[in-house]
Image 1 (cartoon, rainbow, N blue to C red):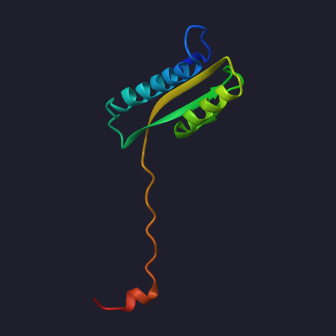
Image 2: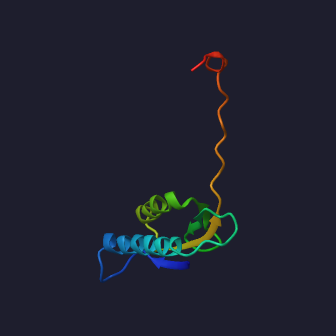
Image 3: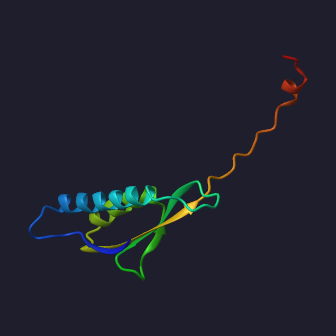
Length: 109
């Protein structure tokens, strides 16, 4: 999804406009997460996000931080903002096994 959202509307309260944008972002993420993953070893859908006043000034952010940045944009007085969310298949990082302390290795169970 690549879209420019208007943060101000004469006919609607500013908070309702912001909530509608957040709802659309969450709805898009939910719809993309339901898609079938590729046959490779992909484990889940991850999202690459960018936000800014326009495309050239947009910066990469994590999906979890997107809503907070959007709130900050409204408080800063932006009239519109560019949001880009691209879904990609990702693998879960491998857990690194912690070494067993020597004290526990020598004890018999």
